[in-house]
Image (cartoon, rainbow, N blue to C red; front, side, top):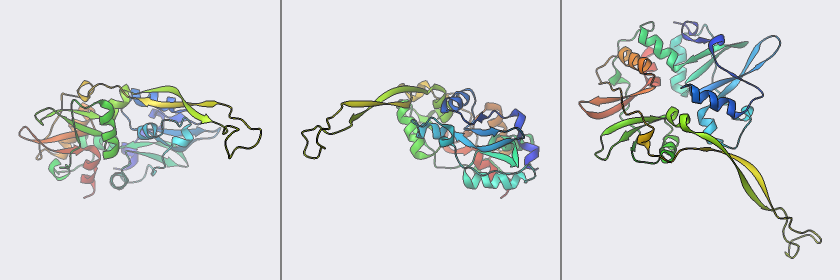
Length: 283
């Protein structure tokens, strides 16, 4: 298969246009389960691709409002590129969405698009998930505050955490999407302090007095204080190591998830992430 066979064409891709603000992107990400949004600039002749704004960028830069300052530089591809070559690049760079650009913006290829091709059998593989699962599982306590779990995801640089109960057993899965769904932007003010030193200070210029404190507007993303168990998915889909990659892809598509815990009996044994299954296309 080529990229053209699996990609989402431009007319079906939701984009944001320059100039724009973070609110445009946040509203979209809260409605959809995507990790980023393409940014375009329309001219009289074509639609130019300019970059991607990810949910990570919104969380990491809460005071930045302009899209042009929030855009990520990610690799692009063309419609004629083989799906195997793009899958390799996605795995190596960690890019979940690769814009398809040939002069102008033609569409986008997502990890989900490739997983769908595997699930339907259009892109064949005979491997089993145990070959691509990771034994390093990000976990948190189900009673931990959601804000703490969000920081754990940030520092671990993964989009999920498996929640454990008091006995250490898996009780649910929390993802970045779950957090974005309940996050909101709040406005505030930050005190800047005196603009000038008092006229009695040894280092002040003669005749200049402190003019008092001033305030600058600030923006932040507020996350509810409730425990992880209030926001996680507790009806967790699981797989075993001998399940086929195609079957795991089918579970991901039908349940709209990006990762599935791997179990041995009732014990958590690893995690199967969608982007890791892409390795089955070129290994």
